[in-house]
Picture 1 (tube, rainbow, N blue to C red):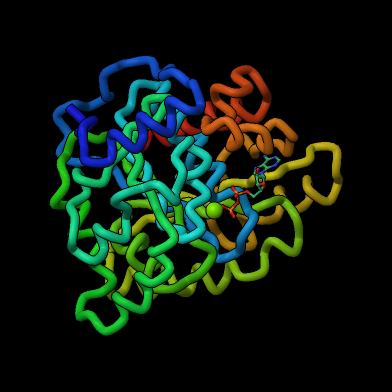
Picture 2: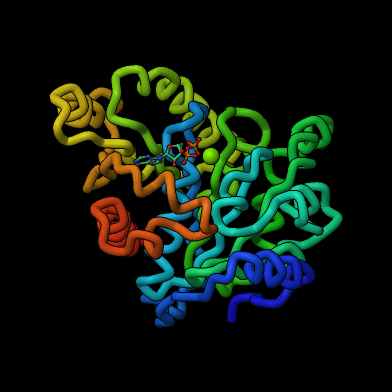
Length: 288
Ligand code: ADP
Ligand code: MG
């Protein structure tokens, strides 16, 4: 079983109590219970505002809905994932920072959130982690080692990266089996993808030979815009990468979800956005 108890549980309970929410996950078995260890997927793009965090929360909830045991890890000092799952980053006792500094283990830090998701939260002190890790030998392997030392109870671990290519993101790429690159369907959103792919190539050479790029996740897609459709048609060929399907539509429903501490999967269950994430999650499930 997933570690649903931890030192942080009380914090979650308090926080969730104030928000008055209840769990909604559909329990189910993993596709392959005999498989050793979870599949770890990083969502990275050093550009901010491309829907990394939204996609981590939504895919996590969708995979949980589909019976997977899901752990999400917030690797952004801004702690948007933590906040959007109903946890106040200012009241978190132990965070991913403690895991990276070696003062806590993953199991000590895990919070149980709504929608059947477990979370390794972030907190503002993570901003100091880059500087703290820099002088350490093997600094890129810290998260990988911590997750390996955790348990194999999860089917999937999803890493929400900060908008940078610094040590935290290198830790994510080193710990991951797969990378998904969320990218809005706009020309300017391309900027930086080449640099990210160069970094990925270096990681594959030096730090993590097994890292697979599963593709670009088109986000904030406005199907009425010719420009968006052109970008969508072009982007896979341009970077020689698979493009995950379907694209995630742009809808205001996404703005509402974080305020209530749940993903769009439960705040707007049958919206096009929720449905798109369910379909993407189902396609990922086939690869787990
Ligand atoms: P990142 O983690 O890459 O910085 P976020 O997930 O925080 O990006 O998303 C940035 C903003 O875009 C947030 O305000 C979020 O609510 C909004 N957003 C994300 N996806 C969509 C969407 N499909 N439609 C409309 N707004 C979206
Ligand atoms: Mg984010």
